[in-house]
Amino acid sequence: MLGLKERLELMEEVKRECLNCRRCSLSQLRTQVVFGEGKIDTDIMFIGEAPGAEEDLQGKPFVGKAGRLLTRILESAGIDRDDVYITNVVKCRPPGNRNPTPLEIATCWPFLEAQIAIIKPRIIVTLGSVPTQAILKTKESITKVRGKWFEWIGGIRVFPMFHPSFL
Ligand code: URA
Image 1: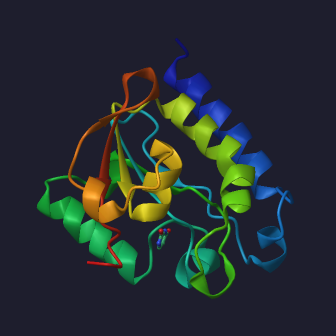
Image 2: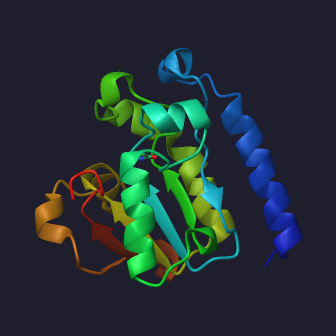
C-alpha cells in the first residue's frame, strides 16, 4: 500500500501525461484539459460526463452552473466539496457539449482508471447516464438505476445519481 506522498506524486504524474494528451480529436478543440481535483485521501469520488464551456476555460471540473448546483447538493448532504475528489469520464470538452462518443470514452479511460486506482474510494457517485453506463458497463437508463447501490471492482460501491444539469 502506497503512502499519501507517493499517491500524490503518482497522481501528478498521471495529470502531467493527461495535460499533454493528444490521443483523440477533442484535444484539438480544448482550451484546457480538465483532469479532476479534490482530496486524494477520500472515501468518495464523483464522476461526471465531460467538461462544459466554463470547465474548459478554467481547467476545473464542475465550476459552471451544474457545478454550482453540485456544490449545493453536496452541502445539503453535509459534504464539503474539498473533502471529495471530482472528475469526469472524458477530460476534454466535446464541441457544443455533445455526449462523448464511445471511442472518446475508451481513449480517455486509462486516466480515469489510474485516478480510481490511486484514490481507491469506497464509493463512486456517477453523475448522469454517461458515467453510469461507462462505469457499470450497462445500457440501462439512469432513471432505472439512479439511487441504487452497485458493487464494482475492488469492493467499490457505485451510486448513480441524476446529473445536476438535469436537476
Ligand atoms: N458537466 C459534467 O459532466 N462535468 C463537468 O465538469 C461539468 C458539467
